[in-house]
Length: 245
Image 1 (tube, helix red, strand yellow):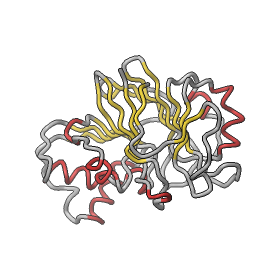
Image 2 (cartoon, one colour; image 1 turned 30 degrees about the vertical axis):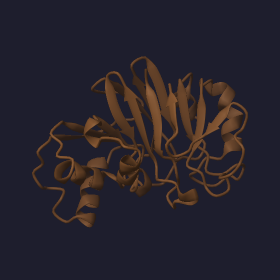
Image 3 (cartoon, one colour; image 1 turned 45 degrees about the vertical axis):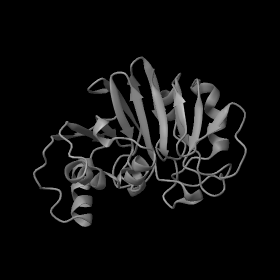
Image 4 (cartoon, helix red, strand yellow; image 1 turned 180 degrees about the vertical axis):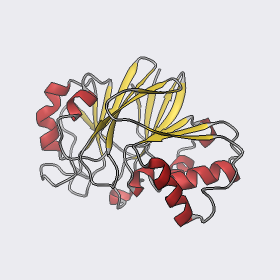
């Protein structure tokens, strides 16, 4: 059984009082996060997740509400949770340097300190699968300005496929990224207002028949989407929502 939990599903600005993006995937062969926004350690504590059980963190793009929790995660692992297990952090090109820079801004000296556990940073090439333990991750390049390639991630684990768009306006690469996925988590920042670099529900809905995902969940809402009724056959994410994939 593969389980998917929204530890945080909010936007960058805390709209609706939601934590920033952080999803927990628990499978028989692996336990990992998809994104780790700046508020993620708070969400991890709130929902009773042991961070030492997490094998990997997969990052869609290098904005603070999607990767800014990593300095806190790493320092917690070293100073509080006393982690000894290896950790893999995987994401787009530029991740290793940006993570080191973020750590130095927030906690000077923390990027070069000796840790009691190994950390491997993997920069994922677009368009082909990369094995990370029992996980196979295939990144698809999206359109969202963040100073490095933004990705949607198609993740295969224990016979299931989970796809997350990350933040992006509509690009045709979303279709192969999510085609026939068991769970497709998609940004829907607005309902029907089209803005650069973000996805709206009306545009996404028009393409869902071509995607053919078995289950669709919308996330990363602006105030425009908060409080709306879910469209037929689609779920709206909430912090703490847990699904069986």
